[in-house]
Length: 156
View 1 (cartoon, rainbow, N blue to C red):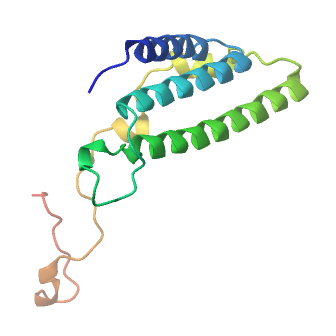
View 2: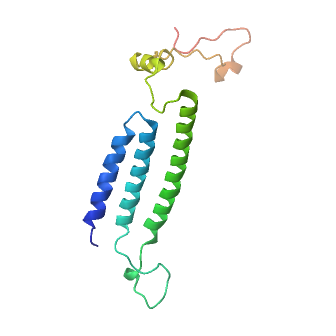
View 3: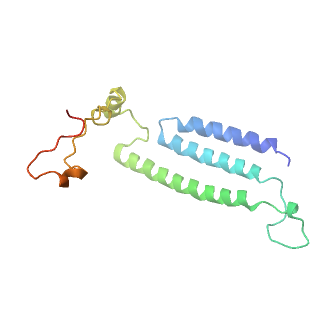
């Protein structure tokens, strides 16, 4: 299998520019970055398919190594559909942001800054586990006389 260096270079440039645009604050640039990233992934999948071959229809007189691999083609079609859906979703977000605020740039929010500055300690999740405080009757409670209180486990 030969590797097409031109396709790989184009894919690398598309992915690099796509990642750069995704890191911007403008939603339009984020959408363009996602589109470039998806196209770079499509070119990568195209290059993994190898050289062009025969259609993947079985005939007994054709050797198996002469066929084209249909899996990269199916993955590219799936990627195209997913990138179209993400682009449509981003266009909806951009339009809604423009209608509500007349801007497509994501601003720093005061609440986001507050959350970023708070400690990672969560009082509910990070406290010590209390001693067993079960209210269930132990299994051997039916053998004890009625009216007697049982000792809790771990207490002396």
